[in-house]
Amino acid sequence: MRGQSLRLGGGTLLGISESTARRYELRDPDVRLMLQVRDGDAAAFEELVQRYQSRLVGILEHLVGRRELAEDLAQEVFLRVYRARSRYVPGAKFSTWLFTIANNVASNARRSLSRRKEVTLDARESGPLGAHPIEQLAAAASGLMPTRQADHSEMCDVVRLAIQTLNERQRMAVLLNKFEGMSYADIAETMNLSPMAIKSLLTRARVNLKEVLEPYLDHGESPEGADERQ
Amino acid sequence: MKNEPSNKIDDPARDEQLVAYLDGELDAESSRDVERRLASQVAVRERLHELERAWDALGALPTPEVSPRFAHTTLEMIALAAEKEQQLEIARFFTAGVRRLLIGAAVLLAAFGLGLFVSANYGRAENEQLVNDLPILEELDGYRRAESIQFLRMIHDAKLFPVETSDEG
View (spheres, each protein chain N blue to C red):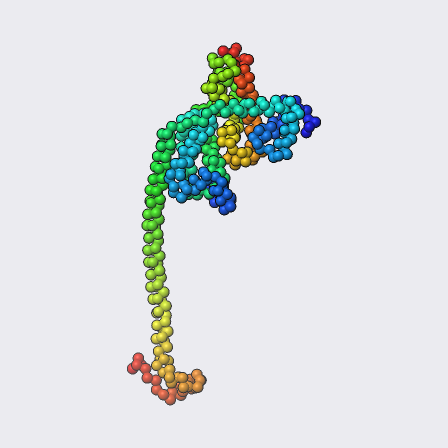
C-alpha cells in the first residue's frame, strides 16, 4: 500500500515525498483524522470507524458472500489500520489505503475458506457463474412477480447473485468503482494493477453483468430453459 | 474510426471506450469522439444503454447498516490490542534496561581490569629503567662537566678515582 506504503497507501516512509504527504493531508479529511490517530487521538480513530464501517462491511460482504464473516473481516481491517498508525504516512487517499487492506484481508479469507471448502468459488476466471448461471438467477426469481415491476427485495437478490457471478478481481473493481466512486487510478493502486488493467476488468465486468441481468431486467421472469427445469 | 462497422456485437475495444466514457475516465478529445459516434451510430447508442442499464441496477443494493454494537465491539477489540501493545512495550523496556545495565557493568569491569594491567606493567618497566640509571643520576652534575664520553672512559680506565659502591662493601 503506498503512502500507506505497505506499499501503498498508508504506511512507511519509503518512496513518499513530503510534498505528496502534505498534499493528501490538505485534500483528504480522513487523512487528517488518521494523522491524529497516529498522534494518539483515540476519538479520531472512533470517528474513522463510524465513517467507514458500513461501507467496509458492505464491500466485504459482496467479496466473501457472508455478512457475519464480512463483519469479522471489517474488524480485522480496522485492527490492521490501528496497528499501522505509528508508521502512517499519507501517500494516497485514506480510502484507497483502507480498501487495499480490505482487499488483502478478503483475499486471505477466501483462500482460507477455499482450503476448508466452505464456499463455492467462481467456476471460471472471466465468465459468468459456473455452468448454469441462468438457472441460479431463475431460482432467485422463481415464484415471484412475473411483471417487469419487480419487487425491490427480489431485485436486490438478483443483483447480489449477479455480482457473485463475477470473478474476484472484477467484483472488487466493480464494488470500488460503483459504491466507493473510486477512479481507475485509485482502484489500480488498491488492487496493485495498472489503470489499463482496471479499465479492462471493469469493461468485462459490465459486459458480464449485462449478460446475466438482461433477461431479468427485460422480462422480469425466468428465462427460457429455466421453466423446464422447474 | 468513423468508417468502422458500427454493428459489431462483440467489440471489446468499443466497449472499453464506452465504459470509460460512462465512468468519466476519458480525456476531452476521446469523450468528443465517443459522443460523435453516439450521435451517428444507433448500435453504439444501444450498446451504451445496455451497459448503463445493468450498471444502474447495482444501485438497487442498499448500503448495509451495521449495528451500533459493531462499532462498540470493534473499539473494544482495539482497546485490548492497545493494552497488550503497551504491556509488551513495558516488558521490552525492562528487558532492554536490564541488558543495558549488565553490559555497562561488564564494560566498567573490563576497563578497570585493563587499567590495572596497563598501569602495573608500564610502571614496572619505568621503575626498572630508573633503577638501572640510578648511578648515573647520582653523579649527573659531574658527568655534565665532562667534555666527552671518551674522556670519561679514559678516567675510568686510568683508575684515578676509586669507585664507591655500597653493594661492594
